Image (cartoon, rainbow, N blue to C red; front, top):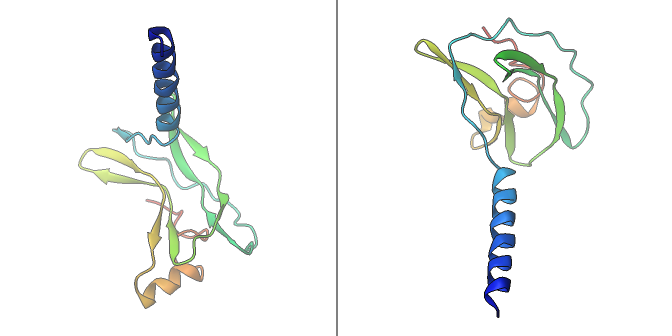
Amino acid sequence: MSIRNIILCTGVVMAASVTSAGAHVNFDIDIGVPPPPAYVEVVPEPRPGYTWAPGYWGWEDDEHVWVRGRWIEERPGYYWVPERWEQRGPKWHFAHGYWEHREHEEDEEHEHGHGHGHGHGHDRD
Protein backbone atom coordinates (compact mmCIF):
# COMPACT_ATOMS: atom_id res chain seq x y z
CA MET A 1 0.00 0.00 0.00
CA SER A 2 1.41 3.40 -0.92
CA ILE A 3 1.93 6.18 1.60
CA ARG A 4 -0.74 8.19 -0.23
CA ASN A 5 -3.34 5.40 0.27
CA ILE A 6 -2.38 5.02 3.95
CA ILE A 7 -2.86 8.76 4.52
CA LEU A 8 -6.16 8.70 2.62
CA CYS A 9 -7.48 5.71 4.62
CA THR A 10 -6.39 7.30 7.90
CA GLY A 11 -8.25 10.48 6.98
CA VAL A 12 -11.43 8.57 6.17
CA VAL A 13 -11.28 6.64 9.46
CA MET A 14 -10.68 9.85 11.43
CA ALA A 15 -13.56 11.62 9.68
CA ALA A 16 -15.89 8.69 10.41
CA SER A 17 -14.81 8.69 14.06
CA VAL A 18 -15.50 12.40 14.43
CA THR A 19 -18.89 12.06 12.72
CA SER A 20 -20.08 9.15 14.86
CA ALA A 21 -18.68 10.65 18.06
CA GLY A 22 -20.39 13.97 17.35
CA ALA A 23 -23.76 12.26 17.10
CA HIS A 24 -23.61 11.17 20.76
CA VAL A 25 -22.21 14.23 22.49
CA ASN A 26 -24.17 15.88 25.30
CA PHE A 27 -22.92 19.09 26.79
CA ASP A 28 -23.45 20.01 30.41
CA ILE A 29 -24.96 23.45 30.92
CA ASP A 30 -24.60 25.40 34.16
CA ILE A 31 -25.96 28.94 34.16
CA GLY A 32 -26.81 31.63 36.70
CA VAL A 33 -30.30 32.28 35.30
CA PRO A 34 -33.25 30.22 36.60
CA PRO A 35 -35.71 28.83 34.05
CA PRO A 36 -38.97 30.73 33.49
CA PRO A 37 -42.22 29.42 34.97
CA ALA A 38 -43.44 26.17 33.44
CA TYR A 39 -45.08 26.51 30.05
CA VAL A 40 -48.47 24.82 30.07
CA GLU A 41 -48.64 22.22 27.35
CA VAL A 42 -51.70 20.18 26.41
CA VAL A 43 -50.72 16.52 26.68
CA PRO A 44 -52.08 14.51 23.74
CA GLU A 45 -54.11 11.33 24.18
CA PRO A 46 -51.98 8.23 24.91
CA ARG A 47 -50.36 6.64 21.89
CA PRO A 48 -49.77 2.86 22.05
CA GLY A 49 -46.09 1.93 22.04
CA TYR A 50 -44.96 5.47 22.86
CA THR A 51 -44.26 7.58 25.93
CA TRP A 52 -44.93 11.30 26.12
CA ALA A 53 -41.76 13.26 26.91
CA PRO A 54 -42.97 16.63 28.22
CA GLY A 55 -41.62 19.93 26.97
CA TYR A 56 -38.88 21.76 28.84
CA TRP A 57 -36.90 24.97 28.87
CA GLY A 58 -33.70 24.58 26.87
CA TRP A 59 -30.82 27.05 26.64
CA GLU A 60 -29.84 28.56 23.28
CA ASP A 61 -28.04 31.76 22.32
CA ASP A 62 -27.86 32.89 25.96
CA GLU A 63 -31.57 32.57 26.64
CA HIS A 64 -34.18 30.02 27.65
CA VAL A 65 -36.17 28.59 24.75
CA TRP A 66 -39.16 26.28 25.00
CA VAL A 67 -38.66 22.80 23.53
CA ARG A 68 -42.05 21.23 22.83
CA GLY A 69 -43.03 17.83 24.19
CA ARG A 70 -42.71 14.84 21.91
CA TRP A 71 -43.55 11.17 21.57
CA ILE A 72 -40.68 8.73 22.05
CA GLU A 73 -40.80 5.01 21.49
CA GLU A 74 -41.37 3.05 24.71
CA ARG A 75 -38.68 0.87 26.21
CA PRO A 76 -40.20 -2.10 28.06
CA GLY A 77 -39.04 -2.23 31.68
CA TYR A 78 -38.09 1.48 31.71
CA TYR A 79 -39.74 4.84 32.32
CA TRP A 80 -38.74 8.24 30.95
CA VAL A 81 -37.17 10.78 33.31
CA PRO A 82 -37.68 14.14 31.55
CA GLU A 83 -35.24 16.95 30.97
CA ARG A 84 -35.17 19.48 33.80
CA TRP A 85 -33.20 22.24 35.52
CA GLU A 86 -31.68 21.53 38.92
CA GLN A 87 -30.41 24.26 41.21
CA ARG A 88 -26.88 23.60 42.41
CA GLY A 89 -25.84 26.38 44.74
CA PRO A 90 -26.06 29.69 42.84
CA LYS A 91 -26.10 27.92 39.45
CA TRP A 92 -28.77 26.08 37.47
CA HIS A 93 -27.74 22.79 35.86
CA PHE A 94 -29.54 21.28 32.87
CA ALA A 95 -30.18 17.56 33.38
CA HIS A 96 -30.79 15.62 30.17
CA GLY A 97 -33.73 13.23 29.94
CA TYR A 98 -33.03 9.52 30.13
CA TRP A 99 -34.60 6.09 30.47
CA GLU A 100 -34.62 4.74 34.04
CA HIS A 101 -34.84 1.00 34.63
CA ARG A 102 -37.99 0.02 36.49
CA GLU A 103 -36.73 -2.02 39.43
CA HIS A 104 -39.55 -1.87 41.94
CA GLU A 105 -43.25 -2.45 41.99
CA GLU A 106 -43.89 1.19 42.98
CA ASP A 107 -42.28 2.26 39.71
CA GLU A 108 -45.44 0.99 38.04
CA GLU A 109 -46.94 4.36 38.98
CA HIS A 110 -44.63 5.91 36.41
CA GLU A 111 -45.99 3.58 33.77
CA HIS A 112 -49.58 4.60 34.48
CA GLY A 113 -49.24 8.34 34.21
CA HIS A 114 -48.42 9.25 37.80
CA GLY A 115 -44.76 9.88 37.19
CA HIS A 116 -42.28 11.00 34.58
CA GLY A 117 -42.82 10.77 30.89
CA HIS A 118 -46.58 11.06 30.72
CA GLY A 119 -47.02 14.80 30.78
CA HIS A 120 -46.68 15.08 34.53
CA GLY A 121 -43.70 16.58 36.26
CA HIS A 122 -43.41 19.49 33.86
CA ASP A 123 -44.48 21.96 36.52
CA ARG A 124 -41.05 22.94 37.77
CA ASP A 125 -40.44 25.59 40.42
